[in-house]
Length: 207
Image (cartoon, rainbow, N blue to C red; front, side, top):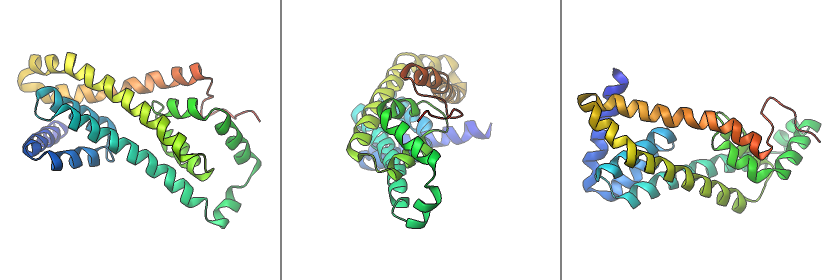
């Protein structure tokens, strides 16, 4: 019940910001740094209701996602500048992981968008190994744009109907929608990784 109330308050607050597009854009962008799934679903709902401009909502969450992902890369890059840390992790296994990442960088980056718990170690590793930031940003931007299009389309075509059907229980519908977009990637991710030939995290990459 507390979650329903907090979501209701959040959506009410976002709707109240609709009169100030600049503030709303920054709020949605910052929200992705806290919870990407909730922010994207919330932005899609606001756009579907006509409370927020579609372009504003779509651009805000995508910029937020890319900023967050790039931030993880930069953390890894900054860590690589410390000699003591480099010496600590300079092992045969680390070099094998680096070669594996370099060989399958694009498939791995696409897969990690849908693999739970994989973004932090993968994106920081990309920065630590100093893989090209331009390639990293392009691949993740395209992945984010594609995923958010799917969410926005589903919310617009199905989500609003579900919320209207639930009536006074609409915030339960919001929770369910967030849950769906939280669970689905975790079902699709492993299959996508196998499709791309990316090994699971528990496996040791071949040299």
